[in-house]
Image (cartoon, rainbow, N blue to C red; front, side, top):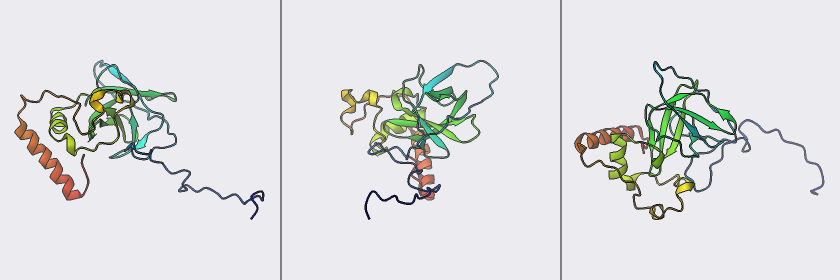
Length: 203
């Protein structure tokens, strides 16, 4: 049929490939949405606490766990950890104030936290150097680095650092030698055993 003949337009349904999230090539990130508004975050606190403002990418991804995951794009003024008050922003606006509630996912170069304070579940994914890991996460990251998922790749700001060139060497150093490793190893085994029984990969 000649190309200059007009074709009947097809309606794009909600499940058409145009509207589906697409996975970024070779990044290891889950599929990214074309666009989404920032979550509206509101948490109550009894006394003044510092809030760390985190610039995130415009497009969230379908994260592990529930809801959307927003990815930090610029180093914040403070390292992020469980319990910290945060506000995320990008060119579309600001979210308000939420709190990092727990560690959701740990990889070689990224850690994801759940955020409380939003009407719907949401998460924040942060490069390891911009985060302050808890004792369990530090131990796991140091002792089982090779077993952690290598993707997503390190944040683009680390690409020119020699320590990040060799993907098999751990470029991160934590002072964990004074810690009692027995309880940490037992806790890791408990978590691993649970996820094996549910057929879900924890890390």
